[in-house]
Length: 295
Image (cartoon, rainbow, N blue to C red; front, side, top):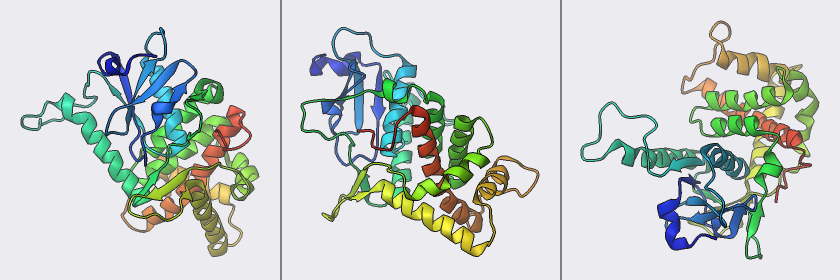
């Protein structure tokens, strides 16, 4: 493996995973080819060759990042080395080159997003092991769902619940090749029985027992489905999710939904939990994984 003293100088891309309770990628490798080496005092990790292989290209690092995001429910992102601002500001910060500040600003934005979703909660690195090193076979595990992982990652990075909902629904459309209404009708019942696996979340100011993020998602999704059926007897939930919500967000002609900082935001935010879990089921089904226990 590359000497730790050399990795910063030679690494081409770093993966940043804000919201982790601990920085544990030290004991992980990817596809038995690349090592994740944590950057001290940060939630970033360098992606470096284990032996004499070439550094991974950008598309591979993006795929690895999407895998980590999917398995941790955190808005992971890629930082190139040297840094290059993807979008240059119209007015530069005095004394701060845009290339230097851009990714710091991205990290702060995602940290704020995590705070909005988890409050004081921080997520555990999912691959704790008693072994010296755990290998993450991401290509074998998710090689069939590259597009769906990209869509899921884009959705999870959204601040606006309307955009987040639409992103998860695009996952369903991608996996089914249809408007997904029939698939949703057939799989809605799985929300209550599907084994999503364990993703521990704890508070950095409390020693209370950790909670499973996916169980919290499940409770909210089931509460929303139950509430919809109770408030609108005879409602077809799959038709509601597609025709009323998805199309109301994506199109500008009929029943248009907008971010009004009130009723619409609150309603769609509740619907997000339904399509988020359905998107996870659809991805894992297409990947050929029997359930959410990926580790």
